[in-house]
Image (cartoon, rainbow, N blue to C red):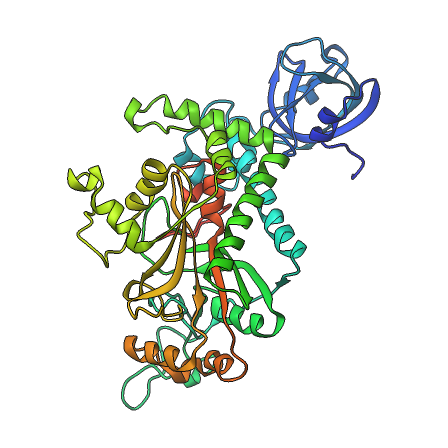
Length: 478
């Protein structure tokens, strides 16, 4: 079964006049003679030429859109337009039939909304073939980047007791019979009888556990699924998504920002090198889609230009305070064009503000630092001004925040004081505080939402289209 050559390898080899076996799925079958075959290795189909006069008519009827076939024959230079080589078939075998009356993916344009409903089959389209090959390359590039720099890949728990963000948007994990939940004498849920003996949830971040690893291994990264029970039906939110979270001992905020900028440039360049044809296809798809929009709503840069823009420009670094001053004096703010007006210092920035800084003001990616401590998490290192923390966000065109991170608070007294201020129970995080009690040191880290990265590199508009099986409110299909 394994003796086959992938279509991408054949098309890139430049060879002809050799015998080959290819296997894949039929995209189209024209004139009982020409099969367009695709095996997922590339968006390019391979044309199989059938000697229909000497082929069993019953077999020809089974060569339908969606059918899986094996074709053996001679690879020859193509006489037709649109392809460099054909396979003149000497033997065709049907590996899996496809009823053309019922197969949902007909050879026509389908809407992304429709394809989400058949996510189990959408991999077979050119758009999703390209997206998931790019996603694969980005995954590999992330591991390669960190491994080349001596980082240790750490698997942090999916089931945890802590809510790292303190947002209370966690999915609870239990093996209780929900119709008969045990209660204490005071009527509260008796978690001592639960599987883990305490209240647990699916992780919202591997960061806190990642810090524990960094306090011994120096440089670690996690890359795994995270969960948010946020009832958000938007094009930017998922209930289950993947996060890359490095944590580095002996790093300050600048080191942290340098590493994040290097990572983003590395993986974008890697995808452009390895998936050039896929990204060119997605660029043209976006250009065609934008032709339907009014001129003022179209992007200034196409997808390839946008990716190159991030590689060619040093990321602009400025403080939150400087950004607020720029936004406050900006034309959209003065003319009340922003949905969320900037009134003054302390405002939590929205995507529209972040994109204005990147796309209109600086025209380059932006790293914002030193945010007000009130709008940031408890673990971020407090600056000497008493008002801000050593946090950083990286902002990208078309997407806003793509990375969020900080130098972590290594001083036990400051960390405990902040936890008390916002009501985070210290007894539940005793293990986290131990890293400050025993050989604590300056350290930093950041989180990169993987789907946000894939969204950016593929140019797609909805995050549900860059993860194989999206999870969102009222949907856990497939």
